[in-house]
Length: 492
Image (tube, rainbow, N blue to C red; front, side):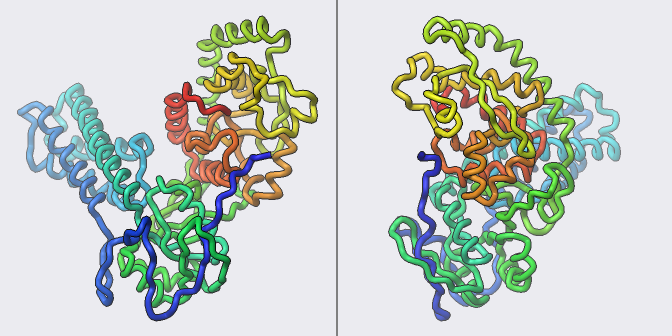
């Protein structure tokens, strides 16, 4: 079985000498911009934040051109632009090491623009602006802001791919090493660890697969690493580390570093929906739930909204795809004989089993093979039509009935067979926590390319990050990205 694609952890963690901290960069380049040793506290790079602020202000000023000339008040427009910038600043939409997609931040941006316009209309001469003109102005403002922010994010994302942002990982050395390994496996996340901050100078064997990351055991070493490597991001592993190293973290923050808390230990007793508290998510980084330390994040309740979305969309899609399913079933019946529907036991929410439906693309030799064989995506005895069904994921359409019935959701962790649930639960501590939420046809892991014979550890991490940061809008974004990838030959 090749369910897990094992990737070596960052190799050779060594305690750094007290005198100097030197970290080799990628492909021979420095890991970050060097600052002169001895320079005092500095502010991190704000180029991205300044560009986003300029975009938000420029969108407000440009929108004034669509307002009738009789209602163009320069002072009101300037205050409107300032209000949007202040609201976005308070929502931490300018301070982030995670570059969001335009769809991810669309509700937050649109909502604050709407609030700013509502205040402007209520408290200024704009109250006499006709309703049609007001709606057009708000729509233009939202469109310009989102287009501009998308351009800035795209530029930032390309820059981070070329030169990832250097970061320190703070926490127990074993867990910090695991987090660093996951980040190094996902260079597209834009963050590259350059050192570990831990109390235990654990020494591990070296490998040639990854650069050796020094283990920094004193506050002085950590500050020198920040200065010498241009570190602007500090990743704090877990709430316990945040409490235990509070003084050291305050010192790093004084040097201009943004502090992000990464959640690596899951409490399966926590509800899937509810107040976030210390676990309130602001996003995910390489599949780890993360939040910016400072303003408390929080997750919104929305179980009823999620179920309503499932029922409406699955019912509509069943009607729309009914002819496609009928044609596929007929072709399978003619080419491969009876038995076009494949039924298999899977594990759903709270560990409850259910029968998942698919169009049959392969006939297992026995019930034991069906329950314990990992993948048949490349079987030579499958017909060309069956290969086509799997490549296009058309064989998954019958799961819309599972969604409509309530066995599954449109978006959620993919359900697995009982044999593999037991096996993976023993191998990966966070795997059972995936069952806090109803399983789904697609999910955050799937749109990251984690389908078929890919890393179970990575899938598990992305699935739990999705649950910790769940929102109805996140479901919509995942569905849109899945639709864009629907016909790609990825298999399942």
